Length: 251
Image (tube, rainbow, N blue to C red):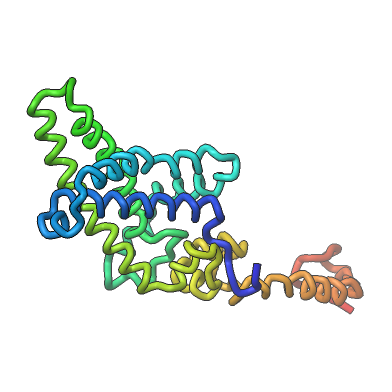
């Protein structure tokens, strides 16, 4: 790891993210190509689109579930816990006037809300899509309700994922973390100060500007200890002890 970077996402998290993202984009494309008039006419091959849509939908939860179950998925499990925890600083972030002073952790509230919506949507879309595909045991009202829910969640996902992509390209440092893993330490200190403090073991107020600065601490401490090793406390006979802050002298 470079002295100017922090590890943000490990390989398991990145693979799970990009596999899920690919499947989600396939689902959006095939779904709208079946039902959106102009796109449907452009693509054609409705039966193929329906088949691809079905299997992509069944596979959609697999990358996340497998990554969570893996022994190497510890950081993913930890980050899912972070996404589910809301703090006072998150509430501060929602106020544009106070946002600059919010000491955020690894994820900002927008990312938490987006992850919650997409996670819930995967479950809802899988359930409603199953009703539409294997409709035999269900009544007409169930099928109509499933169609309504499936369609509107698809529209919601289109906007959520589109916004997610736009914001990702507006923040190349954050995008680099999901593409390659590490992020610039300066970016982390500025935008995610609480997470930065966790990573460098500091309260963030006097944290070093880069991780490499931490390596200078042991040398500094050793020098200071060496200087203080030659100091001899002189006991004030009046107070009969050292460390009282009045009678101590140092040679």
